[in-house]
Image (tube, rainbow, N blue to C red):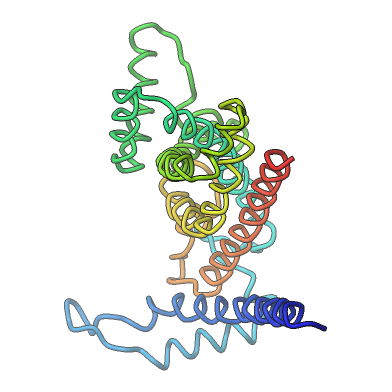
Length: 307
């Protein structure tokens, strides 16, 4: 084994070790964060905050002891008790659908529009995109809903459903469009900046001197060197998407994981530690699945444009 092969093997082993460390660290973080409402409590009415160690350790002990019996996967909603596994499946599918397909649509549009902005001099259109990108996400959602209601009041035509009336009649188009706005805005700005920098490189000038067409230079020479920047920032983008998922589900009345978690975290008998832990672990699984699917999507782009 030569020196380069040895370095590659050491690097691969280091990546395996880092990946293996992520799971226990994430589980420990979830267990600790979920304890905070039990740990930090006021002493009486309006009294100072005190650390309730005994109550926190009791909740942690009950969770681990209930794993075998299944008690840790039961929760109270209203006055009735339910199984976590019976209720989480539908919510997981709802969140996965909007986050994955929203990010897929947003990244595709953002990539293409970002390339266009890097080549175009239409400054007024860029300013409009920057303006909408500066608005908070919940403001954009409210503006979209208001626009649909305004059009319906003036014309009698309901363009989109502004919220889900029930699980059997969910809103699809408008929430999906809202979920696509975040990755689209992120991709437009960053693709435009990175594309401009890449198009100023010497090898691009050499490709132009060879007489290659503009689209070939952009998609087969410049874009392959732009995509790695977004693979490196993918965790940041998904973190923003997961954080905005709660706003999306609340404003559109979607029965996703965020709605499920927050609506039942405080049950009929008080704070439900086991439910919060299980819900946050579900979000980690959701994050991992969406991350893997988007990496696969970017890999497909790389294969197409590197032919």
